[in-house]
Length: 149
Image (tube, rainbow, N blue to C red; front, side, top):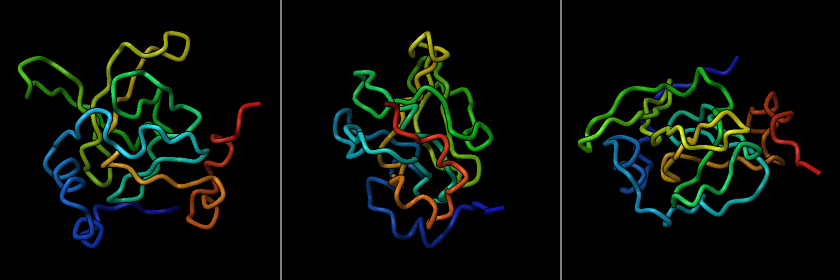
């Protein structure tokens, strides 16, 4: 079983924007994240710990300006907590092992898929293409990223 941790080397390698988002609970500007328009098949992992967070099969276009997902690939890897830092209550999501700020979860997602919208900063994610998943240790998740015919 793979062990995911908050890795000091990974933190040192973060860009200033990635550091601000993941370590200082920042938010990237809407529409600017490189993974917003990504349509490739694979998984999204925490940029710090590498823990698997979301599958491409659960990504959808919400129109909010950030990558949106209907659910985590592993619920144990995504922690939720109340966040009133903007003067109103929201639910923050962080990676369980990397403690990276990922974004927020809202209840305005697709009703037929559970009704949740995980609104996630691209700066907190690393995309692993389906072709690379096995070699990078994510083979157990291949069945969750099959292309839908």
